[in-house]
Amino acid sequence: MDRFLKIKEKIIQYANSDEDIKGIIAFGSSTRDEEKADEYSDLDLLIVSTNIDKWYSGEYPSLLGDMNISFIEPTLGGGKERRCIYGDSLDVDMIVFTPAQFTKALEDGVAEWVLNRGYTLLYDSEDYADAIKKYVRRTCSKPDMSENEFNNMVNDFYFHNIWACKKLLRGEIWSAKMCVDAYLKNYLLKMIELYCSKVTGVDVWHDGRFIDKWATDDILEQLGYCFAHYNKDDIFNALNATSELFTKLAVAIASKESYAFPDKARECARMYLVNANK
Image 1 (spheres, one colour):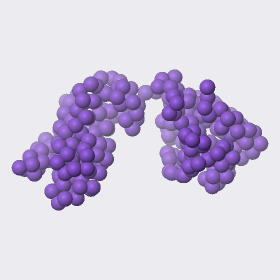
Image 2 (spheres, one colour):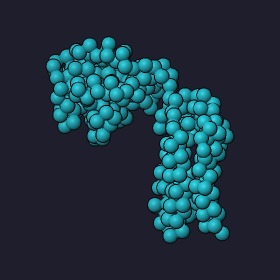
Image 3 (cartoon, helix red, strand yellow):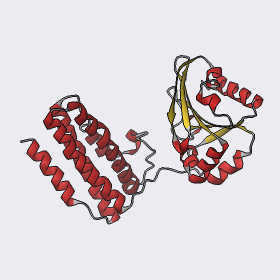
Image 4 (cartoon, helix red, strand yellow):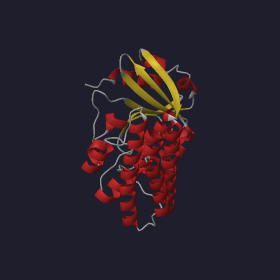
């Protein structure tokens, strides 16, 4: 049973009576052939309209049901996304584009990134179907990185190893934890994605989605040591574990891609952490 059926029916009804609405596209788990929607899935909609203010103001979203939570955040392609909870838990995310923004998103590849795992046209008054077929291909995630990008990221990672350690030594627990479990974890995830894509050849999705299904067993085991409680010693241990896993994967990628590895940066960070622990 489609939990979002009534919401879809209402939004199509309004589209048929409002000439400003040019297209409505469902995407995400509700349209995927793999990792399909379950009871926790949301409804992702891309709405193309010449009057985006009705969506930004909440006027149209409020007509779709009993809306208990609603807010706006920036999204890809220069648009905005309204995120809502209807009833107890029906979460609907609405990316809103003008026709010009949508056309640019198609041409720039932004729309492909959003739609490439599946989509369904719920409403189309402008023959967007052909344009979408032209620009959007079903693909899997295959991250790539130039040698310069790789070295910049690795140096950035090791720099912030030392930065986080200094915060710990100074007693700035919050800043240290946010660096270790947020800033550095973003780089660790990028390295995990790069490694699993290039070395094991799997589809790594994005933003850590389904990482427990595509990452290797040893990576998942090591991740168990990489996150910390709000405690100085625990954060320091998590920093060490994060650095060790990142380094292991980065060295493997550098070898596979024949990239020069920034050994001085690695040793600088390693020695700082060793001395800090004495």
